[in-house]
Image (tube, rainbow, N blue to C red):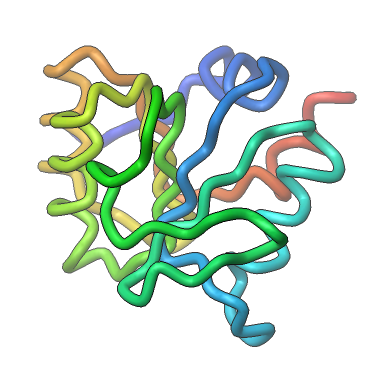
Length: 138
């Protein structure tokens, strides 16, 4: 069955202060993750933890190479990776005990979404917090 985003899950994730691990976040200004992560910080009050292959520090925050390297709890894993690679990230999110995964606009993996839901995680797929947050005010 195809995943359908639950508006209440989106509302809860975007209005509850949380720690978001943003996978695929670097200092590259051409990548959407940089602007969206700044939106999460400035407009939604989220704590953002950068995760990338290089483990770059971004927005003055310490970067990590893997979700498992992040100390403490992770509430949301925000996935800015190709659909063909997101399944491994979702599996890592499950393994570290994240509470939710957010697959960005254009990132679709039904099997990974099913695994996350089966493990008790909330799942949002194929949309962006910067698109969904303004809709909450309506």
